[in-house]
Length: 331
Image (cartoon, rainbow, N blue to C red; front, top):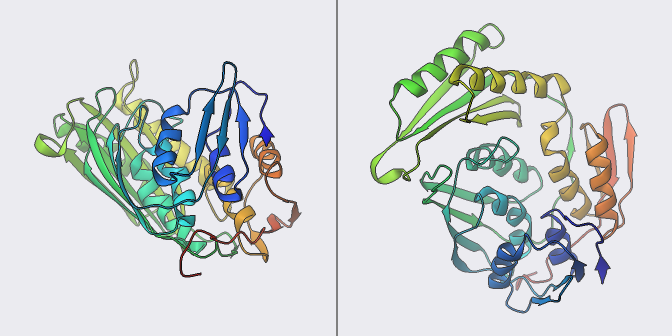
């Protein structure tokens, strides 16, 4: 059993535990709701609570059709489930109810997962669909999405270089607000980015009535796209922040991602490292930047898997562990 002494663990600990079938022992009590969902998709999984710690003993990942209302924003659960459910016995559909947009700017929105991460996993031979049925902004939520993840036999290895950015796309979202909100966000983006990229298009998503939860809010999401490559940035309305400031912050964050470069947005590096570590026993070769936080995450991976990276002219090279889907019926 792998023990974690830290007071807080990341949610991706459960990705490695489920897929490698390694039991874990930890103190953090903030994932009880997520573990209850894992128990639905994996009935054999055991969760043992003691006075000062929890033991999580993973079972076979079955999958199927479920519904769940997370305690926090829905996207917190969707990202790790993209990987876990790829190793399920059968394709899985989950209807989530709750907050689709909001809480803070260090949390991914459903829109980024839909437009960035679903495309990203396709490079590794994975596939999922995400449908936004009803937007639910923080704090009341009451949104609804449907996630479908297709099971696979194995994650593929990837060789990927940095490509040239040729278009910028975006989404100005408002929920139970005047349409002038999205119009103003679009105008600010177009004014500041049209000189950088002529192929620029910002769409509006104005929600009200039956397709909107009760809490008003707005958000701007930007994507810089190249040949099979996407950088992204997003910000949501916050107290004491004007719409103009929020929109400009989003623009600056996108330009920062472009400046950092790489085959994938640097903010997705830990997710990429996860897929590389689980992939076929071939050499992944991907142009990405490794920072301090990524090095800490690599140490987490090493508690579950053999994982050694090398750097070569801006590329990160590593062999996958060749993890196969032992739950799949038709392997």
